[in-house]
Structure formats: C-alpha cells, structure tokens
Image 1 (tube, helix red, strand yellow):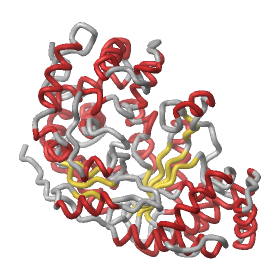
Image 2 (tube, rainbow, N blue to C red):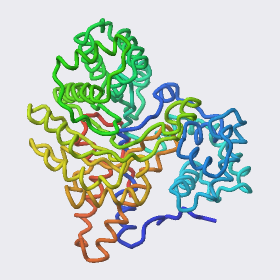
Image 3 (cartoon, rainbow, N blue to C red):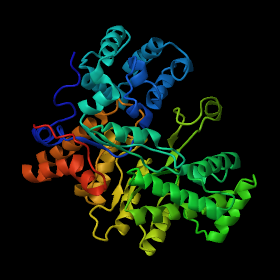
Length: 475
C-alpha cells in the first residue's frame, strides 16, 4: 500500500500548492549536522541497510529498547540482518511516534519502496534496498547529489586536524562542506582527567604550550583562526544552560591552575569558568563574523550503567528542566554591552521554554542584521511534527517568522535528508491552515516568498558561505 502520498501531511489545497510550487524543489542548506567528514571524503559506499540506517541512530535504539529488544541488536555484535529484522519488528509498534513517518518517508525517497515495514516485508525490503545501495548513485556523493544538498556544516572539535575537510575541498564536490567549531571540552573543568587529556591534544594541534592559562587561551584562538581559514563560519556549544556567573580573568586563571593540578572545579567554579570561556568564544565569533549556535536543555547520560558500558550519544539522554532565561540574558548582555554579540541561534530542548527564550532573543535584535537572533528549529526531542509546530508558533508570535533560517538534520545518518521535506510539509500545512481560516491573505506571491525564504533564501543570506553548485529544480 502507498502510505507516503504526494500530499502527505498537507491538509488543504493551499498547503499543497505552497509545498509543491515553493518548498519541494528548494536545495538543502544543512547548516548543522553530525555527519562524519571521513565518510564524505572517502565517498563511502554502504554495504547494507543496517550500515546506513541503524548505525549510530540512537532514536531507533531508544524505540527498540522500549519494544523489549536486547541491546546486542541495537549497539551490540548481532549480525546486520538480525539488527534490521529487530528494527522491522519494532516499526509497527511506533505508530504515532515520528519514527513511523520518518522511516517510511526514507524508504520511499531513497529506494522508491512503498511497502509498510514489518517482519513479513523485512526480507523483501532488505534485498531491494541492499541491491540499490551497491549502485554508484547510492554512495555518499550520489546521495548528496540526489537530494540536492548544497551546504553541509559538520561538528568538529578544535583539536581536529580537519584533514577530511581538506580532502573534500580537493575533490571539488558540488556540495560545499564546512567545519563548525565545537569547543565543549574546554568547559569540562569538573572532570580533570578528561579536561587535561583534551588540553594535551590541544597543545599538539596548536603547537602552543598550555601549562598556563594564557597559553590555553592562545591555543584556542589559534585553532579558531585555523578553522576560519578552513572555511568555518559557525561555532556550536552544547550546554544544559548558559553560564550566568560573572568571572574575572584572575578567577579563571585560578580555576584553570587548580584543574591542571588534578583537582576538580566545584560547581560554582565550573559555571564561572564556563561563563568566562563562552564570553571569550563569543568575542572571537563576533570579530570574525561567525554565527554562534547554543544547544540548550538536554540532560545527558542519565543511565550510568549504560553510559559506562557504551559511552555518550547512545540513546540515554532526555529533556532537562533547567532555568534558562536569566543566565541566557546575562550571557547575551555581556557580549552586547561590549559590542561583541555575534549572530546567534538558540536551540531549545524543552517546549516549556519556547516562549521565554523567543521573547528573550527579541531583546538583542538589531545592529542592522535581519533575524540576527534566531530561535532555532525544533531540536532533538522536538524535531517532530508537533515540536516543529510549537517552535514555529512561538517564533511567529514573538518574533519574525519571515527571517527564520529553517530546518537542519542534526543527524549522524546520510538517510536523514527527508527531514527537510518533513519540515517543509509541516510548515506549508500550518500556513495553509491559516489561509483556509481567513487568518492570512490568500496572496500566493506573498506566501510563496515566505516559504522560499524559510526553506532556502534566509539561510543563504544569514550564513557567510559560498553555496554548492546545486540548482533548484523547476516545479
């Protein structure tokens, strides 16, 4: 049966027209993801559906665990087909979970498969998908071409050599691939072993002695410069909340020295050190015209036993309940008061904070930059239909939807590009509903321009990147 129809998620004539004439054929500007640059540089060819679809996908692992699937079929050593079969048995149980939509949308768009995935169809789908994955057009470069991906921004540690980005640039791939500067480990002064190991790697990457705090700062500034030369124009920071405690340089030096001597910083010291460092990173970003991205509100690694067994990013994180607005205000104001507040995107992981964060960002708009402060698209646990609608509604009510830079994949999987289609359908359906109710004018030029801006034009104008040689398809 055909589940993913031409007008999937589109519930009015206006929504259908907006999607098919203005959204569908826009290229993809994926300004934040976790795709491995090595796979892009090597033009990886995936051996089977498990490799491209289940490898590293903690969304699916969480659903499988909830369905009683043993860990060996998620992150363990089970045979690839056994893992896929365990997922196929789980999919029928995901009704009303976004995974049901995403999975069938992905099967349709990548392989042209209309079958509903379950235990009885698993073998047929496995064979058909694997046969196609072996074709040249299903290599990583082929996938990027198929989905008209113009720009990709990966997520990279300051100690990374960016050697794979160099190879990608030499390959002259039509898709432009840029690094993003993610210095989260520079804040981990609560964990001396982790912090000091990372500082050693920073010394090696920068060639700067970090025995003292001044060397540490110099090394990070040098890596920031290196990333800029490699095309980077974004930083990215994953935090439970912004760091509101004020911190002098003298206090930061004292905390740094303590941690370098093997003693963990106390919670208030960690917050102060993070506040100093985030201000430092914000100033670097502003001086180079970068965009800073703040990912707020995730409560990570809740299951200690599984974290010790599997490590981070394996599906044991959740929405956190942290105080966001006051520390965010203090952080943004520190940068604004010195004229060093860069363009900023704040991604929120708790729907309770959508309106408070959206209203806070309005305090720091200006300096002649349209949409300078962005309420980021629905993130992680909020990147499904309802979460996307909540984010769009909060932004519409408290800011200017017309300057929104749109969707991203935030994914580790090359199977995730239909997330952009999913977002565009939800967006067009919301606008279409407003028109049908008489709450927006039935002006197709006005509305079509809005949709095209959100899906493509705003990102092109907001980010200082050259886009790839991927043309819009004609409707």
